[in-house]
Image 1 (spheres, rainbow, N blue to C red):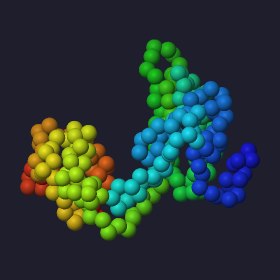
Image 2 (spheres, helix red, strand yellow; image 1 turned 30 degrees about the vertical axis):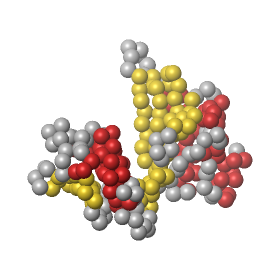
Image 3 (cartoon, rainbow, N blue to C red; image 1 turned 60 degrees about the horizontal axis):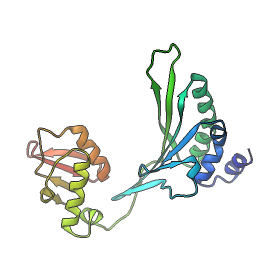
Length: 218
């Protein structure tokens, strides 16, 4: 394909349109293709070029590059899966030259009583190494212009991930965010992990027994 030869020759950063063109044969063959950007926003193949697509998101002092390609149909056979894998190999190789790596492949099968296995979708997730940003901003100012705004933002993030807190229990330090009033019994560590990821913190730990959660920025 002319497109692929140009990409390989100049090694330019691929646009979403060019990524779609590299696997356009799948779309032409009737497979549906969705793209999910770094913020989880969905763009259908037929809408590529009509909407913004973010290849990275900034979380405090880190830039996370990631996006996902989903190929699906009402029912994918094993032969369909093989064809999709073969076609995706081209774009995987091109993206690798630009610093992207294939982070995860998720194949979702359909459980039924048929003898032959069928599948619903295949997700291909791509990432780059995390980029550390230089910033003079405090952790608090990243989440809001005032203390109250920042505390409310943290409270909403926690609530979205089933960690119930009061906004005035959030304290900001130079290298951490601490929460000292939350529902200890009904809060799972998996949910705290999710909050830690959204906050862009490097790790978290308990303090004062389990009475305080501290999100650490290194």
